[in-house]
Image 1 (cartoon, rainbow, N blue to C red):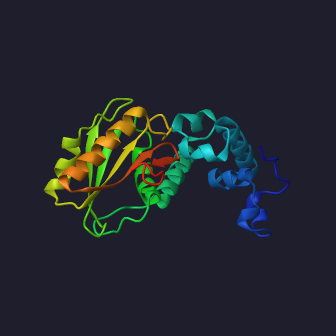
Image 2 (cartoon, helix red, strand yellow):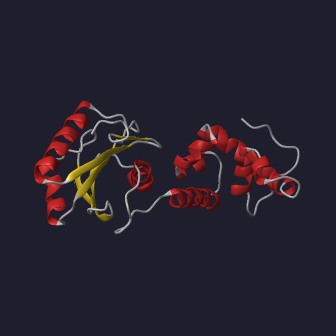
Image 3 (cartoon, rainbow, N blue to C red):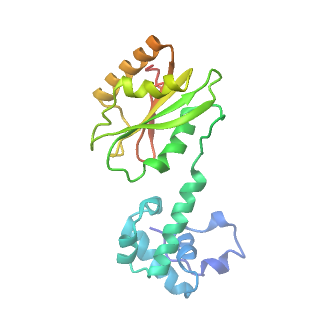
Length: 220
């Protein structure tokens, strides 16, 4: 945990660069608008102790902020900042955009799956030049299974005359490592794609801040 600074962060900003401020000072600036800086530093210290690390602020909830002693307006301001941060990080996928890498898939879908309690399965349909045609949510499964069938996966791809397709689903557990069922269904989907003449370019599993790409791992 950062030691309490001798000078208030807003004062130190006139002397140093943003990168020179500690995690504690940055959090104090975030939550300290309209309140004395000494109290902001105390609140920031208490908040960081409650969540465990600055990284976990991205997942903090309103009740956790209130239990850490933050007022209603300050708690909402912190949540707004975290949601804005996730939007900025997100890479939007849109029709006509060329598919380049699995990291683009992860950056687009990670904010969408955050907080989902069930596995969901998506298709990213591509044309002959690997440009995105549509993103389609195929199914919503149970807590541990997306329950997809090749028939349901390839029906929209055939209807859209797609030349290629990417498969995407989430793991609510946060661990993106493929299960035996994930490996089995991926093999079935790839084989179905060969039969109907639609290339399966990748299957990306989204976890908490991590992802697994079958193509990147040479498993397609």
